[in-house]
Structures are given as C-alpha cells and as structure tokens.
Image (tube, rainbow, N blue to C red; front, side):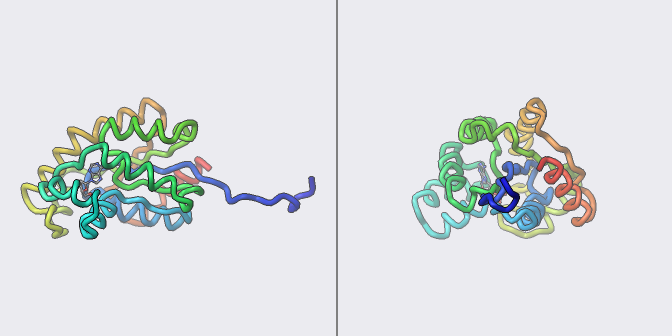
Length: 197
Ligand code: AMP
C-alpha cells in the first residue's frame, strides 16, 4: 500500500512511572517529560489535594490520612488511577507521578495494564538523603515541615523502596542521578524514554 494512504492513529507510548522520594524532583521532571511527550502527567498527590478541596467522596475519605501525612489507603488510590487512565486523553500514553507507592498498588497496576505492563518505563530519581532534607525543609508546604518530612521519607523507605526491586526484577528500572541541574536530569530522562520508543 502506498505510503500516506493509511490513516495513522497517533502512536501510543508506553506508560512512564516515576519512583523516588519526596524532594527528588519527581513533580518537576514528570511535568517536563509529559509536556515533551505530549501526554498527560497524572499526579496522585494533586488529584488527592483537588479531591480534598472539592470535598467529594474521595476527598473526605483521604482527608485524615493527608492531614497526618500518611499514605492514603491502596483501595482509594487504585480506584482513582483505574478510572483516570481509562480517560481518552491517556490513550496515547501518560506519565505517572506518585503512583504506585506500595507493592499492592504496583501489583494492581500490573493487572490494569495487562500486556502493556511489560513495556512500562520506570524511572527512579536518586538523590542523597541530606539533599532531600535540605530541599524539603526549604519548600514550605504544610506537610513538608520537620517531623512530617522525616515521616514521609520513612514511609518511602518502608513502603515505596521495595518497588525499586520489584521493577528491577522485571527489568524495567532505570536509575537516574537526580542530584544534578534540572536540565541535565530532564535530558537523561528523555533519552531513556525515547530509546524505548
Ligand atoms: P505527593 O504530592 O505525591 O507527595 O502526595 C501528597 C500526599 O498524597 C502523600 O503524602 C500521600 O498522603 C498521598 N498520596 C499520593 N499518592 C499516593 C499513593 N500512590 N498512595 C498513597 N498515598 C498517596
């Protein structure tokens, strides 16, 4: 068939997953990458804060956890993501920022994605703990103060760190040094994702 006679659907990209603790630069880098790829960035932290502000069912259920700086229960997050990635704007791909954060969430995502799961690109932003503390205590969100910062970093170690192994074993993990200028980190992330097609 002659080139040009086919109607091309937009190429769909494999989902991108960001790991890395609070302060590693996930939000900034996920937004830049999503922009660059022309796909939505899905931030579960933003979705939960929006739900809280809207006072809807999810917001009311999540409120006590958000106030304590605890992780919100898996079932709430899993349902939220299942619905969000079914939206039409996600058909071409998306960048997940803040999900999955626990093993049950990662396992649920595997189920949701089916055969697509194996093509996911997982980016782990690595930043030394001292630098994370410096960045977080300087940033000034309510949940970024003193003890709350320690608490969030500890949650990361306990609940999210195991995902690094989970994805490494599946051969999908890319480790990126996040303790560098923002542009250098962005360039690396983009290179990794584009190499994956
Ligand atoms: P973030 O802006 O990504 O740091 O998220 C802010 C807060 O939302 C976190 O401290 C958690 O309480 C909650 N949260 C966001 N994503 C998740 C998730 N995947 N699982 C559980 N809680 C989450």
